[in-house]
Length: 252
Image 1: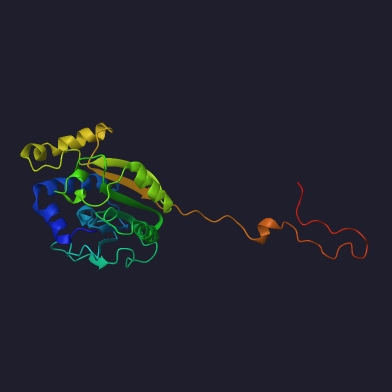
Image 2: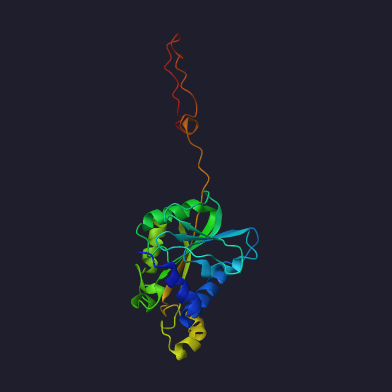
């Protein structure tokens, strides 16, 4: 079940813990995907907090928000780019998107398999998807004081296996939000230090798992009769002379 858009907005834009989480996740996204001219960048669920760095450079930015969640205008003060959509039927042409971020979308979906199929459809060849989900080994998935305490948490192996089943190729994974999900001033002040420590210590479980996957489309191999029948069977050979017909396939 999707969270309400008002609750998500209030967390990320009106609480100090939410602003800390937004900054930590967005900084890692920009490290993975530096803004580039000409890209179409989309986000599904409540991914708009991650998309602001791309507004200036990208060809277009699209915020897709599922119907059960609701939609809000975004970004504030600029032309709206967010749109309400069906969870598994996005109003985008096939192959349009170069970069696709999903946050608060997969873990709360009632049909995650169909959702991943739709994500695969809208990505162009070589396109990249980034899934941001609660880490089942982290603290954030165990507390419902944040949006990451709702829905199904994932392990890295579970998420990568699910992506492969839907045609994606997992490329890399990492965790963020290594500080506890606490409003205590000490943890808020030291959040950046915990993120730096988490990047150096892979065994330190972060509250959020991020997995990047690509859509690889390979050219089809030549098939059909031409690949099987190297020479046509000369059916009439030998009818007059008594010789047996020449076989169609070489024995080399």
